[in-house]
Length: 311
Ligand code: FAQ
Image 1 (cartoon, helix red, strand yellow):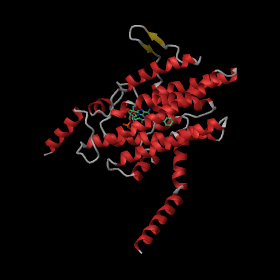
Image 2 (cartoon, protein in one colour; image 1 turned 180 degrees about the vertical axis):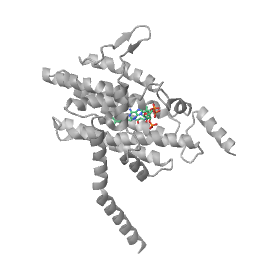
Image 3 (tube, helix red, strand yellow; image 1 turned 45 degrees about the vertical axis):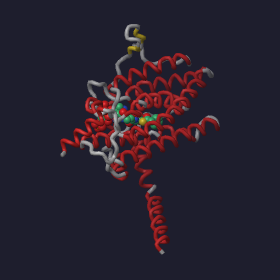
Image 4 (spheres, protein in one colour; image 1 turned 180 degrees about the horizontal axis):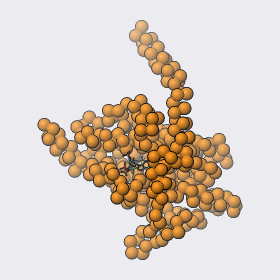
């Protein structure tokens, strides 16, 4: 019987049909989806912190409204993804516990500080830009709830990316000081943004299996190349310089060749030793414990309402 179930599952994957929560699936398929979707959800939630840092200091009402909306979208993406993840038989509490204990990962990118307003531009332009490149293929991922979540998420990320690029464009055409601020943000965010897309294919332990299951539709290196090819002309358009002396258009491949990434830095950040890892985790853990009375009050209120209905 197990063989039969497995054959049905394999056939669905081969036919590009979606796997739904109540369908039979291999235990490893379930586990790896819980891993990736929860890491994605945690990234959205932790990802609110670097930008949250600038909401009170946005330079105009218009900028403030847009940034506030963007950060709210990220909260929405996180909750949406936690719900998709729960359909695989894990509870929200377990997922939070994994984040707070340091057992679960979240994207390396959110462990870097946001030191100037231009960082809001660089994050929207580069971090959301890389997120879109990574997530558009995920709209075709094999697990139904994840694929459907990605459709809406990508639409919103596209607004986020434009919001960021517009900040960079405005700064880059401003005073020398503003232009320098934009260039400095690009210098600091460029390499970490490339690292967001994960280790090289040779180092990526999960890619091969995830490609077979159609969880991943493109490899880390393919996505990184696509991100670079898309972003370099955008930098040129606004007169900023990508901080990579080895970046060069390759006439033969019709792609950009680029310099080596600092993979030591990447693994250090992933293992918890980046510039802001501790601050990010402390902020999440504090929010959780300080919110305890709200959760308790909400539960008490819900119980009271139920009692009222009974009488
Ligand atoms: N940071 O074998 P692979 C956003 C880990 S959302 C930390 O290649 P996989 C929106 C990986 O988990 C950003 N860890 O793994 C936003 C694995 O460790 P494990 C998040 C990383 O899963 C914008 C190990 O290294 N997006 O930005 C990273 O096949 C602005 C080996 O790696 C997603 O999560 C990293 N960068 O490929 C919000 C998208 N890279 O789990 C606010 C969905 C790798 O065995 C502001 N996820 N690792 O302990 C994915 O597409 C994949 O999971 C990859 C990694 C591509 C991230």
